Length: 374
Ligand SMILES: *Cc1c(COP(=O)(O)O)cnc(C)c1O
Image (cartoon, rainbow, N blue to C red; front, side, top):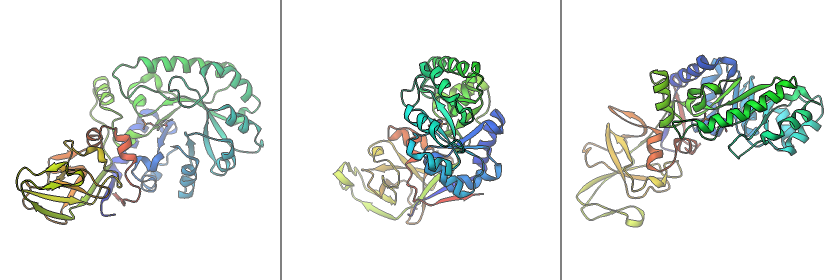
């Protein structure tokens, strides 16, 4: 592929240290699922390994095995669905797994006692996605008391921290979780209790517990604008996060079009004047959303904003370089990152496409080369 992604090692390290200094080494679980939020699992692991992370989080068991194959010796926590047939693979990967269904719990409890499988029982305190109902806590304590050594954690996940400036719903979830915690503790069980992802680690002080599953912000991205505003107003701190990823592509053709000429599929764009148009070799297959077509989306060429015109194609996108008369084939277009005084964030593209940067980043095609900049 002709486009290239650059990963800033320093920025990733500083973001990691930022969270490590807030929660402590043993309580930080960097989330590297979904190809490390599109940044490249291998590259991100290579940068983080020298920092000796105690924990890493993934979604799939195969991702946990991938980390073992790269040489990771710390704890790997699989937060995605876990099914009984995955028990041997989980033992092989020496993974910690989320358990949130009666089937999985029963299978784990019935597995041979010599197995080193460690489970984190997930409770659904308000997300309605995965986990046991809070009302079942006492029953689960009863079941697990037969095999207390396999219980490594008890956890939940917030539904509504990123999208709002007040956190009433998160507080409700925390109250439910506190009841669950008490149920375990009063039965003499003291696993790791954990609830927090990036946003709650940053702005919900009561979510400070034994483990923090920090994903998006490790990569220098605020979970949302609301989270950033809350953090800045509460901490009075400077912006502690640095974006890690940039994406650029060469111009592969530059052409002149006459007034009245159409550009792209569907003839949705018609030049109202003589224009110069350039093509960049990325489209929706590479992860540049087709949904930005017709929006105010732009890329940077020679530090100038050049608007996307017509529809984004599968592997190509047309941009208006009329105002950059020296633009030529081979010039570098910046899709994410900065050029001169201008910059474009993953969240900008996500906004143009009416989605979120989580989706934008994780859908960057894994075949695009990721180059670490040291
Ligand atoms: C993805 C995920 C996280 C990380 O969330 P961020 O908002 O990216 O920090 C934490 N916990 C669970 C269960 C997740 O699925």
